[in-house]
Image 1: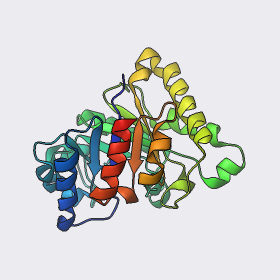
Image 2: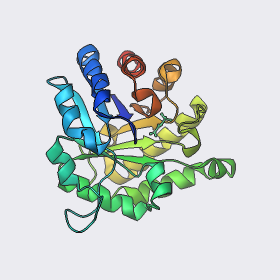
Image 3: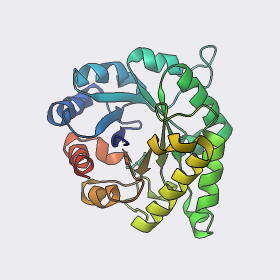
Length: 248
Ligand code: PEP
């Protein structure tokens, strides 16, 4: 049985004033039936852990370096995220792939670093609109899955997020059938690599999830939760998504 996961990605948004939103989520949804995770900017991770208090709200990073330490100005090691209190890290987000030229091999190296530090890797995959229009979606997803998830994946150390690039921050979402097609494909791909253990790996959908569409997306086959950007910034909206997932 997979525990559903509502994950928030704050991206480069938020200051200490925003920690009140985490406090509200912790207070209002700490007893939710699903797991909750929020990935604030790295500057806020330690304070976010404090803001979550005793509530079971996990705090994650948004990226880590592939190396454990060294001369990499401006980068953050996985162990530093863990030291700040993070339990998870998002890796291979399309904004990092696009803005920083991260390849599947780069992402796989970061996943290994995350695992070495004891973090759960939330690996993001997704096609561009041009790739979907050319009928290449499953080929792209299959290639990204093979290249971005290294050997050693387990139910406990991996979450996979399907995030169509064209749906992120646009208000557009795939049809429910299109989401099901990719999630079923991901489950099959993981099963051929991991065997029955693949049944336990959570598959999140991400891309313009909001309170008004969360319930229908959570009813889709092999959708075990969501990675939420914009709608995770306000406790009111993210709380409604958590409630929808808890009821799914
Ligand atoms: C994301 O960037 O991971 C994301 C899903 O963003 P949004 O929900 O804003 O589309």
